[in-house]
Image (tube, rainbow, N blue to C red; front, side, top):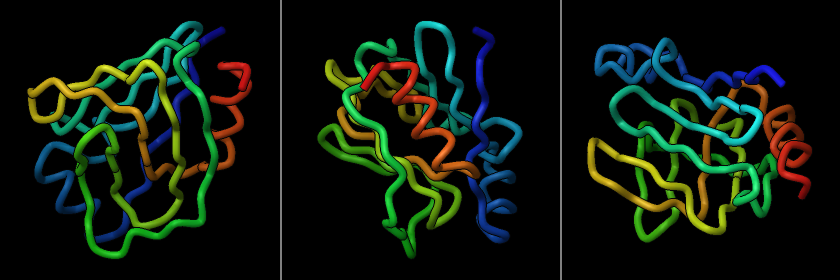
Length: 129
């Protein structure tokens, strides 16, 4: 199966700012491959996990009003260029990632994408959950 690519969603102002910070659309997205899924937002975050570590994937109605970029703590991370289009993905064992170069483990990833329903469905089908 060739990799599927899901673009991160960006708002007008955040697209400009995050592109200037090398975290814009040209360097960001979610890639779903034969055996794993990866997420990137420029140098802000890179992460990869095997498909069998995905425990859940769903588009959520949650809206994030203020923050954009990469934020998290204690296993829960938000990667967003917009306040909507959020998909929540659960991992066990946690996804291994690097946030601004520092290693982190992600148990719950919230990511804003242009096609939230498509990403959630593709992840569930690929992982068999």
